[in-house]
Image (cartoon, rainbow, N blue to C red; front, side):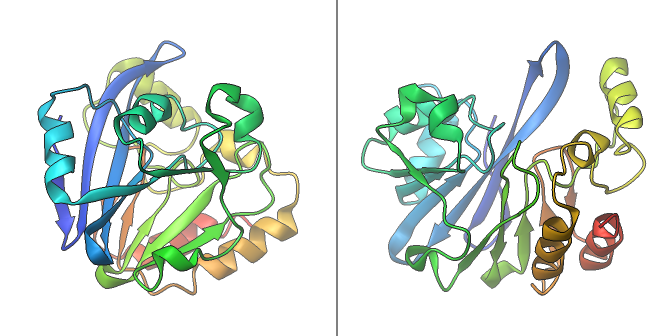
Length: 228
């Protein structure tokens, strides 16, 4: 694993593992904010002494670590331990799910966090309490950062992963997976959040599973979110 640049002050790295027996990849995104402060979004394993950990450390000082929803917390504890000076954020309900992290966790707000402005804007996507996902807009690079809300599992994948992606509707293009749609409890709230998200003038989408979209990104997201 290694960090690859997406834009100035924006990097990513992917990690392959099995979730409930399903081979998948997940993506960590690193944002460098003013004053050389780093935000780690959806951390992946960074063992002590690893090249990936050294890369992150070389970029600046890790000030913020974020679990972007109630599902993406598997590697949060070792990341928090590696950077004891960082503030750790998670969605509403994660502290109850991870009592071992409750002492470090601060709850993400529904809107912007002043410490991240003006470079990084934040929105808690409403209407899906099982995930309580947040989304971000990195203004300097015009990049939308999402986790499970939008997915596109393209490329050469193991057959169980191809089957899963097909069944959840994310094999052929960008979409809100059926696994997420099934968890919606307030369609009107989700629609309002989708409308807010689409006000951001993003030209790139970075998501956890598995594509980075650099072409026609805003239109693709608008089509995907039209389910609400």
